[in-house]
Amino acid sequence: MDKIVIKACLNGMRGREQNRNVPWTPQEVAAEAQRCAEAGASIVHIHARTNDGGISYEPEWYAEADRLIREQTSLIINHTTARLPDASIDQVLRYLRETPDPVDMISLNTGSIAINTPLVHGTRQTMALPNSYEDIRQTILVCRERGIVPEPTVLDTGFLSNVAMLVEDGLLPAPRYLLVEFSGRFGAGFQIMPGTPRSYAYMTDCVKEVFPQATWIAHGIEDSVFTIASLAITTGAHVRVGFEDRATRIDGSVASSNADYVSWVTEVARAHGREPATPQEARQILGVPTIHKKSPGR
Image 1: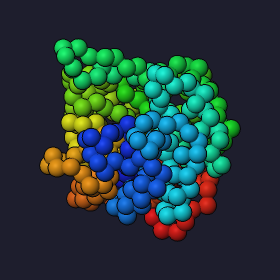
Image 2: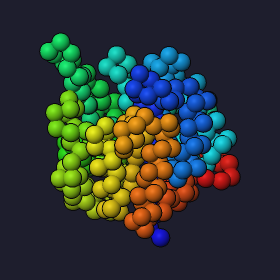
Image 3: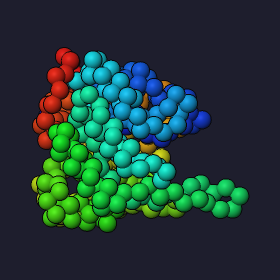
């Protein structure tokens, strides 16, 4: 049976004013990871948060979350390298270097991201998430030091061109797979390819043109989550879902857990003859080596 890799993005920068079930502490994140593993996920993507929901870059947070997840599951663990404008690349490199055991993989944004915040009093604020060539180079070198797999992420064709450049420069191998990311819709304030069927077809055609041997994990945000997930399922690709990308289920009700989204993907995938990959199968599909001794089970 055709296998599908399901990644659960457990928290991101999501606030509890949108969903009170968003996990922030390492203990909450690990509990969510276990629920997602039972629902069919093979990867969890996590962001460090403070106890009051702020953004954290502390190695101790990641070390504790990783330890708890590994004690309970055999999931592939995926850290973020995104940072806010007031944070330095050294803060990211510190937690990549200083966790006692290296994480399996990191999401590697291959360019800067501009976000125009929601309209308030007739205006918007622009927030730019920085990621220069030198930032990316340093991140890749730390990944080499620690045996971490960098996951190239592309948000439009400019990002895909940057991945090709990094390959040409010898910093990255030709990718086994990419994370292809879409915004919610036209006009949503993100300078990212909108999550429409036409955009999905165009972006994935470009991926196949530049990297013919690569597969991809795709995801939308907010309005486009279920559209992009459905397209990825039916085109033989892989899927990311979770609280980072959306706070509500497909019917608009508040999700009780990230596992709600994973269960939805599992059900739809099985209706199309696809079975969720186990973490070990996902490692083989995506080329993620087994670095750490894992506990039995999913």
